[in-house]
Image (cartoon, rainbow, N blue to C red):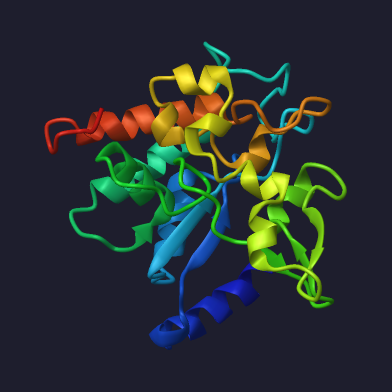
Length: 236
């Protein structure tokens, strides 16, 4: 599969007007710098490093789910992986590609709003219209449980204003109020934003928790903040 993907990316690189970037899911079995440098060879204008979809009931490889919550101390294999790539990106001396997760965290630390659902408190700005006209929440919710993305609404009978009032959508429009108590009290909570909404799910109690990647996100955010110190004034 990789040779075919490599060939396709190289063809795209020859047509920058059609080349938006590359999505890459973090794989702990792959050495982070090898992954990063191999992707740079494809000259992506933007790189999205994504945490595998997981939750407290179905934890990702390398992490134990346990009861939902902000666990300290704890292993941070995904945070460590991302920190390694961040340092290579930050220390490059020139911008070879935009890495959305890193840029979002830097922007949030400087007081700007987020533009991605992985971090920050900005309201969700997307729904999915299926080919049959059904309106659903973002596809990633399907990783939580069967039917999680369904709204029961469609474009034939419902307006998008009605969609905004759906409980699942409304819950993601409330910013800090939608976070659990431990996230609201967390010193990096406004930057982390509880993490990706999908990763907060726990069977039986829903999405009102910290991310299953809580410790990893805090590890990455604190590291980015440390690298920013002395360079710019960080928002508090």
